Image (cartoon, rainbow, N blue to C red; front, side):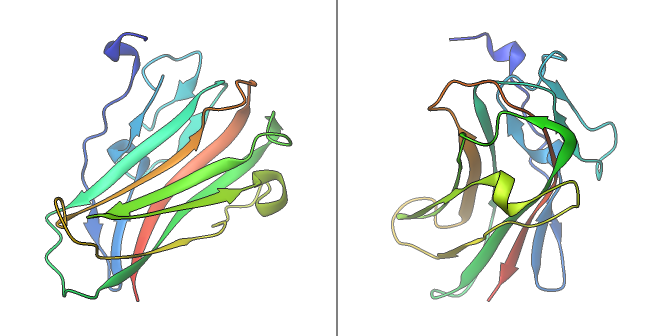
Length: 164
């Protein structure tokens, strides 16, 4: 396992919006994020983060201290773009995960058919408050760790949580 110093620990901040929350990349945890060969981290809070190249994509975050009604639900979306020089995504589906209490949802996405050089929000996940531990936290993540192929040219702009 690589040194934790190579992994970027986000500042875990988020902003309340009219309909939910927004999380910018500076708040996300990024495996290999502290290695400039692999990621270009945001300088300012609302800047995007840019994947240069990795063969292990793991970007995670959470919203904590959620105190909402028992049956609340959120749509969770990563706003991303593939840059014109993006590579390695054709045979590398990305998995998007959300967890709230004991409720976990996964979604598989093919980024080459979902997004291009325009900023887009591919498929979202709807998560409903679960039971058990950590019901005051919503966890989410973006993963491609299984095929071990190099990929790059992805820009993550934000993660949006919209109450429905």
